[in-house]
Length: 144
Image 1 (spheres, rainbow, N blue to C red):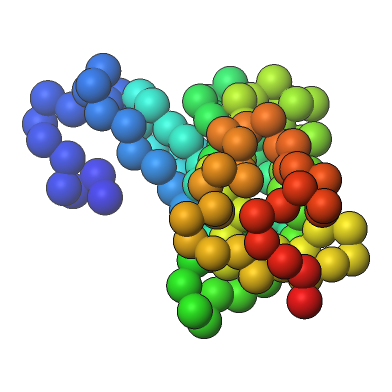
Image 2 (tube, rainbow, N blue to C red):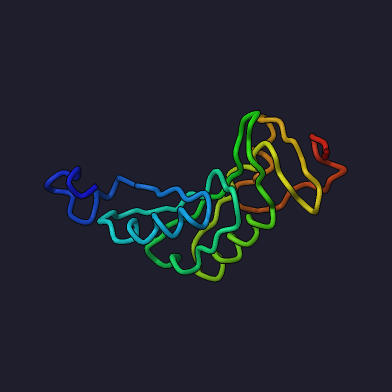
């Protein structure tokens, strides 16, 4: 990447944010050590699509401006487990890194129930970081 940067890049431009996506533990271990060392002024980690539990704690610190989490969309979407979302949120709170829950994804496991969530409801249920979903009886979609 450094070969592609402009000569005046330095530690990065003030108006440029470059994110790193990690969808599972393997990719986090592979990508984040490299990403952490790159000369980028504004860095965020995106766990989307979140495909498994991820321990981000070794990588979280003041160099990370935000962690965004979201499930996968589409008819062939893979499962996103709410416990994974909550665990990443817990890690972020401990490290004092802002956390944003972007969307549930199409196949969402919560409290032992698998939900198939229509695209139009995936973002509204993510609640932008509040990590609170409506009680099952108030959901606009059904468990299977």
